[in-house]
Length: 394
Image (cartoon, rainbow, N blue to C red; front, side, top):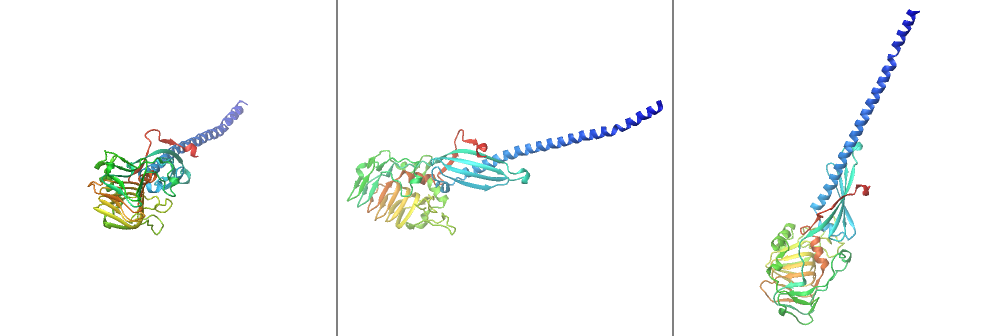
């Protein structure tokens, strides 16, 4: 019996190994599975963190692209409290930037970056940032409808009017600008200002004197001077000196696709804001020594003349005209809505005749600057301009 008991005990010990091994394998399998699961989770967390940062970088890249290539022509036509969206694809994803116009001076950019690399499993991370920007622009601020020197006579039915005016159909684009009236004619010597016939002077006051008006009044504009302005105009391709001393029929021009054709030298924009060239406000330069604009035409923006300027009938211009020589008009239908600065350095006799009108407009002056890519830029505020809007956007 003792021998049999010993045999039974030995046999029982042999059967214990199998469940032990199976149990160990199960435990090892659980540990391995848990290890793979934890590793996969760590990988997912790492990739998610990497893609989240990448999405922020993509969004920032989009915002930087918009700010670095600020298109005043395109973005200047956004009505206040309205917005437009620009989208582009880069190596790692897609960015989308919404530009909202708060008051023509402050714009809010909402930039969203979406990661597209990594295939269906890893792509799709998205982050949204907001950036508050402020417009920085050239300091061209005409103090009157006509700022000049020397003898100036308003004859016939001509009118120089300092009463602030909003052009027809421009009201939605002018709500953020000051509406105060200004001087009709500002000069260094009011004894040289006169009217003849039905020529009129209006404003607050109708004319005034400023003894500080000198050559630099017509050549220095804040941190920008005449040479820089004319160089920018030529860089934009609007050096119209090659058209000669007489220019006729300046009219908007469009491409076959219906876009504004800025390359045409006689395309100086369109005074109708919703037209194809309605937001095109070029810097236009003529090297002189004289320029006559006749037989109709229209334009907007800033016209720079390195000599004398003579308008000879049916010319409509919205914006700023700066003339280094004398300024005269003849015939009927000449209308300048904005402001004229005429240096008249040689103190020649100037006459505004016929049915010509120069009417001050704060809106056309400001839009001529704000909508020109060379003269205006949007820049983030110095402090607290950036905000993460991901939770709000999603």
